[in-house]
Image (cartoon, rainbow, N blue to C red; front, top):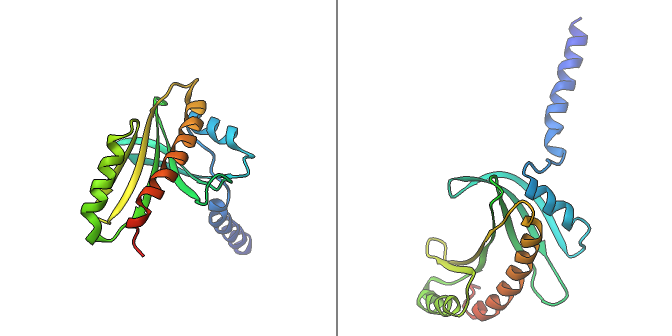
Length: 172
């Protein structure tokens, strides 16, 4: 009886250790739709992170990496799907990291970029000397996937241009 119990205990422990190896499935409908729709894109890689707290609300985070033929850069960012299915946040951080001595130049450059655009938020974080980008989308259940994919394209194109404009300030 003790051997049987020992074997059962060992099997239970092995199964408990292997649970993280199985991919977690998306919990929110908008996340599920987005992941299903982009499945098979060869230049877009996604990784489901899970539910996080962002701004006091529950969002399901998907990390995205994009390497296309139109740019020399690889874009790494997160897509956050709100539990209430009313909004999606696309977030790239850091866009660049800069030397502290270049703070004033970076602030001026980011201010000029923000003055010439709408929709995308670019900001400087002085706690770690980074510039980040954020795009907030209002969506419905029916429009979430299409608007998110459009937002992904906009984020990638916009941040590629901003990266070029800010690359002279990058930390070595």
